[in-house]
Length: 86
Image (cartoon, rainbow, N blue to C red):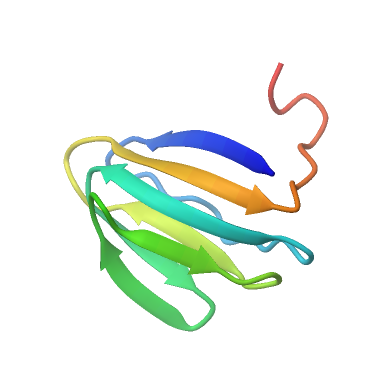
């Protein structure tokens, strides 16, 4: 399992991407966002949990004026590109 803490500034957006063999869960802890999973789109905020099935293209955008913070858990863990975190 990979667990990451993610923070996005106001107006920031995660690039759409997919994890072919991994399932993910995002749990929003602070802020407001717009979550896209496949063809679905929904507003998210503190306490929202989003299930992302394997292979689903997904992204999240901060639509508020404060940081958007969430925890991401991925099973099995995804590979971190070299140099991404040092």
